[in-house]
Structure formats: C-alpha cells, structure tokens
Length: 78
Image (cartoon, rainbow, N blue to C red; front, side):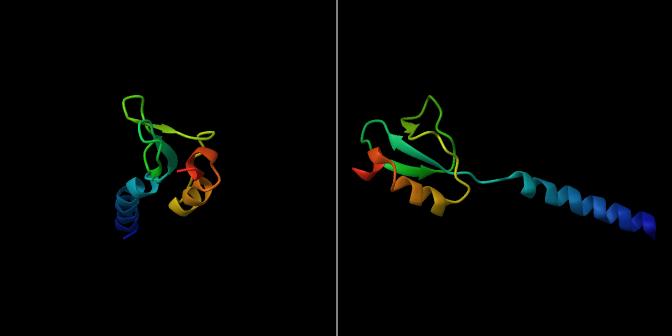
C-alpha cells in the first residue's frame, strides 16, 4: 500500500512539474519603424523589429506592464 502511494505521488509530481516551470513574463517593446510600444510575453531578440524600452524591466503580469508603459516617456508620446 505504501509503495503504491509513493508511486502515485511521484507520478502526480512529474505531471505537475512542467506547469510550475512555465512562468510568464512581460516586457515593454517598441517597434523600430513605427515607434509604437506594445506589451510582449517574449524578450525581443536581435532578429526582431522590436526593442525593449526603458531599463529592460521584466514584469510578472500584463497589468503591471501596462501601468509601467504609461510612465515610459517614449511610449507616452505615441
């Protein structure tokens, strides 16, 4: 009985682990051509047409990023 319980707990933990590893982060990015700011959930790379504005802060929620975007000078003018 104990072995089945331990085995079941290990299976449950193995299934749940990937969901714990996936954390969503948000960035404020600006399109290089249009200068328009948006919230993105992946850090822009050098091959994209967007760049991170400000000090590159990572936000935990979209709402937090939207609030911060209003205070970024280059985004507030657009």
